[in-house]
Length: 339
Image 1 (cartoon, rainbow, N blue to C red):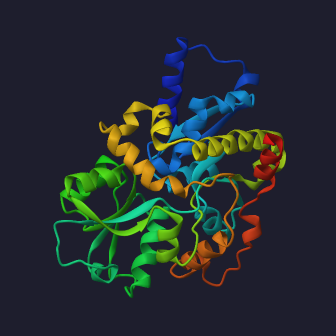
Image 2 (cartoon, one colour):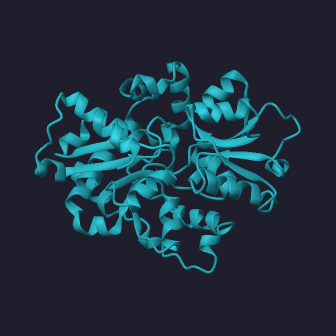
Image 3 (cartoon, rainbow, N blue to C red):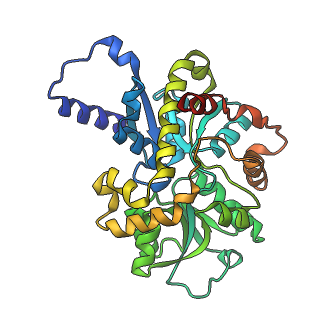
């Protein structure tokens, strides 16, 4: 058990007011899902789903666990510590090239919701080509921000070794890295983007918050935030997978039918980082990234494979079967049930 999971377990016990073990049958029914940063707006669907009570309506006992980056969540899944991950779809492609079988069963977004932010300290940088010799912030090495950053700079003509990637996390640690000039640019998401823009500490270099801006930057839709599981788990837990899909698709419908203000009202207040208006603005600007039905966007997997293949050594000489990286079976059944 990692320190994060141990802390989560203690918190749960404290809330229950007892240290007595729960019945084994109940423990076996619990589904643990790790999220690559629950406070990030790109990953709000599972938190919103829990707060709307949709998991419970499906008879599910779901535990959401926070992590700092998608690569950490991925490692927890592969170790068998959790049953599912809320992270970027591109991990399913990357892991297949490494001989692992991971499948996305609900696609939350058709755009990364990420932004390459440029520090205001260096006025000489105008385009990604100017990042030669600079240090670029990512949430973690091997994370989706790592993948996207490498694509953006290599597409601009830079070669490996001409830039440095530094894992700085998100939120306050990312902001501190920008302000202290540890990084000259970096990729992050809302609400961190809004905080940096408000203070003038950074500006937008590459915007991946909407499907249209993503298509312009990456050449097509880039399916990002998703719910994925190990194929071996899915084969023996189809009923649980369907119930999870039902709850999450219902949440996506709810997001589609409600305003950013209404969505913000349902989220934990500490996610606002002390500025609710800024949180709502970020959500308003990026709400279009979310799918309305949980389905994989057409040509999305192909864009992801193209992006990763442009720089990833893991994919060199490998054949990836994209049909095995996602399934629409469960979201389609959820839509049918809803109708």
